[in-house]
Amino acid sequence: MTIVRTCLWFDGGVDAAADFYTTLLPLSRVLSRMPYTEVPDSPGAPPADGGSLAVVLELGGAQYTLLNGGPAFPQSESASIELIVDSQAEVDRLWDTIVGHGGEESMCGWCKDRWGVSWQIVPQRLYDLIAESPRVAAAVTAEMFTQRRLDTARLEAAAEAARS
Image (tube, rainbow, N blue to C red; front, side, top):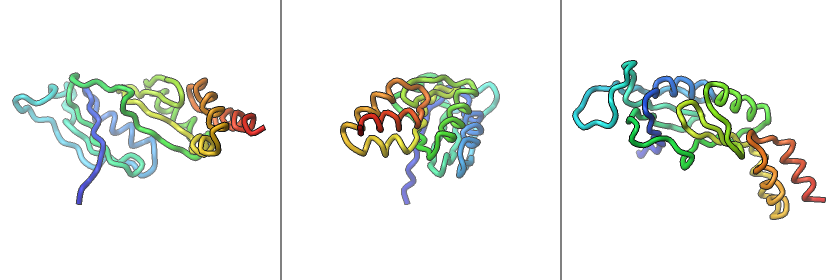
């Protein structure tokens, strides 16, 4: 059997990140922690706090490996964790939790956590609306481009205006 999981490269803090991430969603848990041992030519240096080299976790049922690899490959927006949620309340909860714990806002439903990992917090309704028609998709997308945290009511209003 082949296991598919995403590996995210960190410059320290994998234990704290894993512990934080597993509080965000149901079906989230740490599966294993690999202690850091000094090996010649390994990427990065052992963390000052004696933390893990790698942590394997499930986030909402999807597996990730968080690797303490050092500063060679910093996080960027070219890779993100997308959370598709059912309600505005869940958008708000996740956004407030990630941004409120040292993260930062970006545009169009994107934010970064305090480790620099990019997240997209997206209401399922956005995808439903943009699938309706090209006209609705254009209006909803234009509205989305004005938002940081996505606001379902404003996206719905843009779709309604395009239908009229």
